[in-house]
Image 1 (cartoon, rainbow over the protein chains, first blue to last red):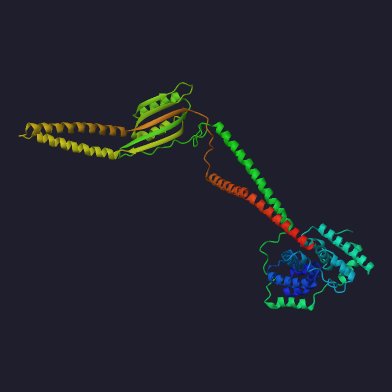
Image 2 (tube, each protein chain N blue to C red):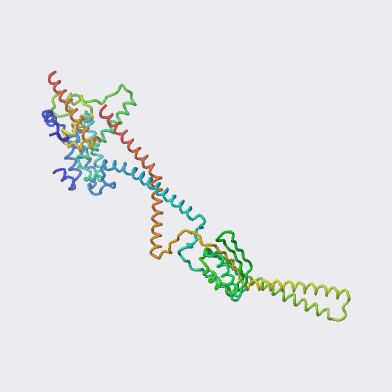
Length: 174
Length: 345
């Protein structure tokens, strides 16, 4: 209902930004595994979105999907540039911008959950963020990731399975 | 119930935990975003739709397949049509090998005899007409042509009639008074069906006029010489010289007069070359279409031409389109793989 409303009624960019900021940030935090980088990328995403707002077509999707697509593109650009930088500077610097220390994915996650999230790949965390945190439906998520709905569902359940397993083993160890 | 939108129930606790403490933007980030939004006047959203219509990728993928397939079908159809029409042409060639283009039907459509241009009444002209006729019986048509020629006051210059086969052909060269040549052509045309006609007119009036002036000059010269010879007191040598000049002038005068008379008599009669051939099978030419028929024919020709151009464009462009589609698909696949490697190493 809300999505339908947002597709039909003209909205100001400021309102959209205000409404979607948390979601975009959560997605980027999960995708990058680094809160600082995620905040920079979120700011860059909204910068891009602001410039492209005129070209936004509500018939192609909700503002949230559009912003998440931009966020993903911004993050991939960042990954690419980091990849190039690492290659340029040598393999010893690999994974320099790895996952932050504990307490970065969520405000109040258990250490076991933080560790479990950190052990997932970016692609797995990405699908968890979209489907679980942002509650996107399977089809929209699949379209955003450029994969089929089945592959999306498989990736989500594999990621959640791994999380579940890691959390359980982490709790036992703790 | 298993739906792709539904997350497995065994993960409910985990999902609850994840959602409970999801990251939220801090004040710093919120201020940065506000600064972006308030930095300059906000561009009007929803004001201009995308120039490219929103076509889902799935539909575009369908087009990527459909366009090359359609091109291939059109090309195949064109090949069939081209080979079909080629066969038709070959068949026509076999049926009527001896029929030159433009020949008319000798069995059904009766073309009107083409009335030749009228000869000039005031100027001398060499008028020649060549007519090819298809006739049922060459022998009787030949006889009838001879009778007609004589009835018009003309005469026969030559007749060649081949009777080796049961139905030979005949070739007649007739001389008809120029004033009656139009009537003669109409009469000859009634002997059969016109297969071909050629008219040649040569104006000889300037030559005749020039010759007339030369004749007058010679006459004056001869009269002058006669006057000089009649005068008294001429020496023998002078007289002999004048007589020689007079003789030459008279001879030239006679020669020129003869040529003049021949030219005039030649111009008085037109030459009609009549070729008579037995009826033969010819390409059936339908009756001439009316105005609407012609318009429809022209429209059809334009459409065929457009189709040819379209076909040419499709045939030339199809490989490039397929190539472009392959390149796009390859690039897309490469980009996806690169992305996968980036986010899921």
